[in-house]
Length: 76
Image 1 (spheres, rainbow, N blue to C red):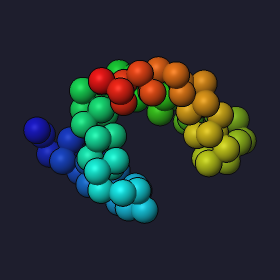
Image 2: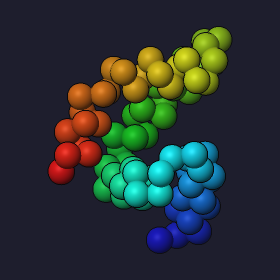
Image 3: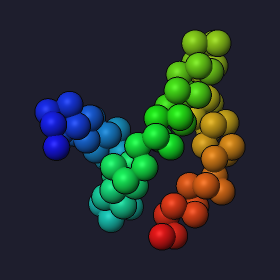
Image 4: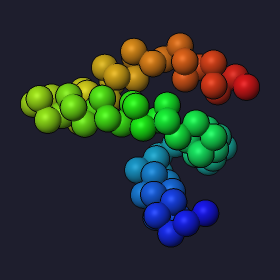
């Protein structure tokens, strides 16, 4: 794990501080296992926020779009 990965993981842990520990660890493991999938989600959220949508609204819209794929990943 590089220094960039370490800091990214720390930021994500901070942002997900209200999430139960077990779920947070599972999601972090998914992010490490499927970085391209989460990068695609991140880029779409960024695009929507640049278009004027709030970060929360953009995240909700994008996550709904990928909900089925995310559920499949979480069941593995």
